[in-house]
Amino acid sequence: MSNREKFKLGAVSKKYEEKSIKKRIESFLIDNVGKIVTREMIIQVSKDPTTGKEPENWHQRLSELRTDDGYTILSKRDRAFLSVEEYVLESLNKRAAAGKRVLPTKETWAAILVRADDSCEWSDGGESCGLKNGATDPIGGGTVKLTPDHMQPHSINPNADPSSMKQWQALCGRHQVIKKNFWDSSSGKVNTIAILQALPHKEKEIALKFLLEYFGEELA
Image (cartoon, rainbow, N blue to C red; front, side):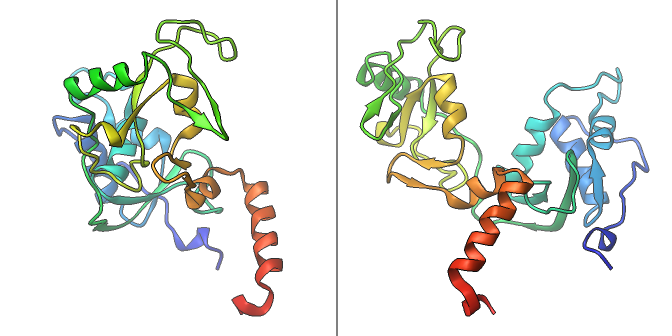
């Protein structure tokens, strides 16, 4: 039996009428724990129960169930047998490290912008970004908008202090995307697992081949 054959396909067996999109998705996943559910199913259950309107931000709510609520929701990046836009709620157990996503206070953010001289604080290998808030990004195009970024990725430290300037930095949109959960700005270390999860299947195979050759029989 293949890994995929161990998981049955879930189903939408009822109408979900919880008040929030996240609660409707959560109830649906709990009803289908250990089963494969699809993007189409999630969109169907997350519709407004009164108007039938499809939400545009269902994917963000799914992410919050992972990061904020501590559910282990597997996707293509976690298991090779899953297709793109297929998900599995592995169990009803929640990670104890889960924490609500927070932002710096208005006072802290204002102080960070003063420290940053209203510029992107991204720095890598001694080279800084320095793009000014409201300027035009010469590489990505568009208007630069600085937003607060966790010095430590949310996946590592979900409980950053909203009042501590040392735990936040100002980043432009391009460097928010580049950093993702891959880089811990407070220590300068990379988040290896997050990088491996984000790799396409072929790159994962290359990484596995390298590790098997590196460790040899030590993994046996």
